[in-house]
Amino acid sequence: MSDKEFFAGAGASGLVELPGLSSPLPWRRSARAARFLLRVRPADGEVELIIPHGAPGGPALDFARNNLDWIGERRARAQGRLAFRDGMTLPFLGAPHLLAHRPQALGGVWREGATIFVSGRAEHVNRRVGDWLRGEARRAIQPAALAAAARIGRRIRRIGIRDTLTRWGSCSADGALSFSWRLILAPAEVLAYVVAHEVAHLREMHHGPAFWRLVELLRPDAATQRDWLRRHGAELQRYG
Image 1 (cartoon, rainbow, N blue to C red):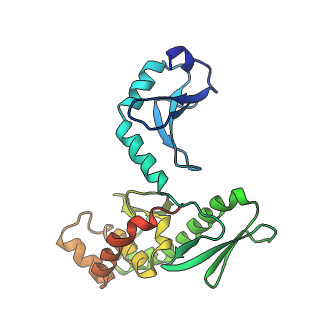
Image 2 (cartoon, rainbow, N blue to C red):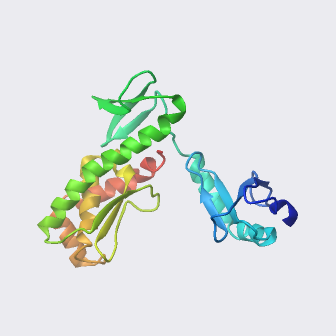
């Protein structure tokens, strides 16, 4: 692709062939972008090159070429992802649940026994279930985190539920906690361990002996749950 093809306007988009990639890389211009970006599209997991309006095409291509390994890694992850769909089985708090689409029903998404029902159009199933799971994650994580923080005499500034694949939780220096929504797929004991782990960082911002003693004070079964997460965590990260 030539620079002139990139200069097609702020709303332009297309595909570009790059050596080292098995399929073309989608690209588009954005009037809002301030720099070159590689973005993972939530809908399909594809990587997209974002180019600021007016930026030259040559540097944009160089930027993509310099990040071929990252693009390949993200594409490989996307190929193994499991979108939420009618008839699939997914874990919820560690127990298998059937996902059943009821297009004519009312109520959005709800759980009855070992079945998770979702209403509405088929193309909205994946998003609706994902949103519902995020809400369930917050409802499970927030009270557990507040209770654990109260036990060690610490205050949480805020709690965020995020779509992360590299970590299950994090704690910032200012007392903000963040957790992956996929924890709601894990057994309740595992979720509680991750919460305790991040809450412990409110007092001990390291992974030294004092930190692990505090984690074990909050969760005496920490080692068992940590081992479960190491063995099964990658399976949970495929969902959504």
